[in-house]
Length: 252
Image (cartoon, rainbow, N blue to C red):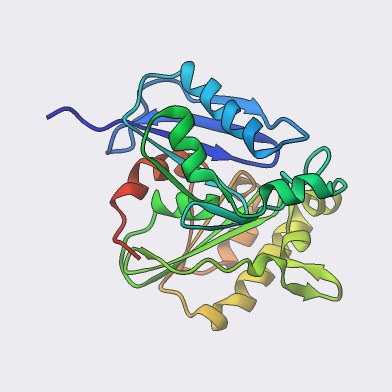
């Protein structure tokens, strides 16, 4: 029996990456990356995904990871795509309305003619790394902070606690997001990452914490040594590998 190929699409604030992978997570072509276009109404994102798909091998299904609150393939809220020109820019009310309760799964299925799975991007990232044993928390460091939680391999209800305040008026998203890393430099920013991990450990009491995303590689060696044996740094490629593996996760 031929292996099932999955088109895995990782939608970020600055770029959209995609690859076609088999069920073992092996890519069948060089991954494609394009800049995230702005302004970005839902239909343009769907068209962008469809265009990327034409440059990759044919797949039998598609997984899309999106930032924000996604429930049953429907976008409850997304932080970047409602803005004029991307992260930290002005929110445009028409885009805010266009994205609210947009059925991304139905739109992708109709446009590509493939069964689709649409999840929060950190959940897809986690699907590529979790061991399906105990309570596993996934944190992605990039434009902001992405999070997902798994129990026994099942995705737990998504919580956007990255928007909760961590210090004064700063949210977790702002506290260790990309703008602060650039402002502080990797050393001071890495100390913040350690502080966040130490603060969250007694809240979640995880069996394993995975830290991924594009900025995970920026954590300094001295900070890595302080994170603890229950913390694992994972490659950003998990965001695409998880697209193939997400279909085999236990039903929530």
